[in-house]
Image 1: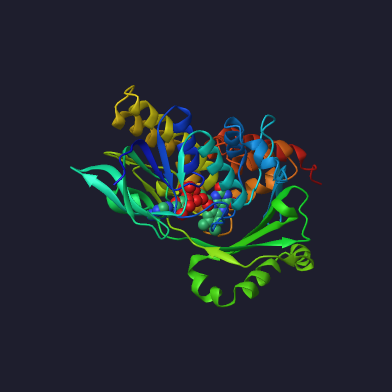
Image 2: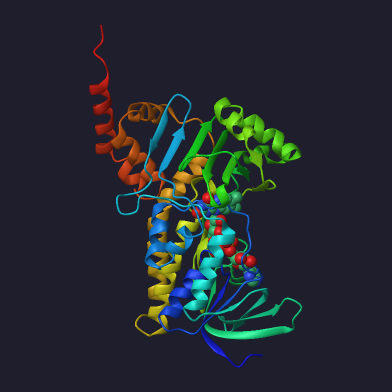
Length: 409
Ligand SMILES: Cc1cc2nc3c(=O)[nH]c(=O)nc-3n(C[C@H](O)[C@H](O)[C@H](O)COP(=O)(O)OP(=O)(O)OC[C@H]3O[C@@H](n4cnc5c(N)ncnc54)[C@H](O)[C@@H]3O)c2cc1C
């Protein structure tokens, strides 16, 4: 048994955990972060960070470190629907780029930043049990790799331990907006497939695939199919994947000219929200809110959660606010912000052809740079779906298209 009483223990040291710990430590709290992994290490995740996530890294003073790893900026998102390609900047004038640092690179930068801010980091430490006394979470029991079981206590235990969260398994929070797996995807890395700073994505019937640049001159290539095909297609991942790319011969040819540098990695995830707090505990990142990765929002969302969660925990630790009040606001702000994108994500993940009215809108957008940029900014998490699909905006797009149409005979 350790004699130390921490203000906060954070389980999980990746996109949600390390920033939460860093922000609490920067506010003067005594924080312990544990993770069963050691860093640098990879995890099953592609790693596109949209401009709002990039803005968080900048605000925390960490963007320069990411850029210094020779991670190239991504200046354009291009969505190829077959008949139309919608292409534009994902960001704004202030924050124009996305980045896709390897998780080996990103997560290490985050862990180091938490340590530099004063958080105590224990890598290779597995939490086996959450300690609950009188209905309140008061600590953790776990062990260092090959070590003996130890107990650590804290005023609050934060589960940033991913979608299979040990903390959530113990406290069994209310779950809502649950949807089972919708699609399954595989990804790998190629050399010799330049993308020139573009995130390119191809949407075809029951298929979606994309490519974008990352560290070490590599290009990440990812693609997927409906979850109902998961079992059948896993028998021949590479064959199924390459047949999918053949739906866009020019893209398939570019990929075939390159060299696959790593193994295939795949996943399919369920969609859910969890109430992210209760007596003595909180959840951040995927532990509290998980969704299909097709819109690449998990890291950006985890960064925002980390800040909301850390601020709420801080205000309750200092006595400025009641725990339930502060954390209730965290949940409300999170849900209001992410639910529209969650709905859009589930729709896109179905990999169904766009409905007729959407096809008309896509057709009207083609060639209208302002409209296309609005669309790419929405999928870059800069603009909300409510703003883009607002009737005034849609009408404006159709009106501009009608004006561009050559006069009939
Ligand atoms: C295939 C795939 C592709 C994706 N692509 C993107 C993308 O392009 N862009 C994007 O923004 N998001 C993407 N995501 C989502 C993104 O990976 C997650 O949203 C993000 O990793 C969540 O971070 P987290 O810190 O909440 O959890 P995680 O990254 O899952 O980290 C949880 C940590 O907790 C630790 N842990 C868990 N249990 C314990 C325990 N009992 N004891 C000690 N440690 C424990 C784990 O070791 C792990 O390090 C993708 C996800 C998948 C599956």
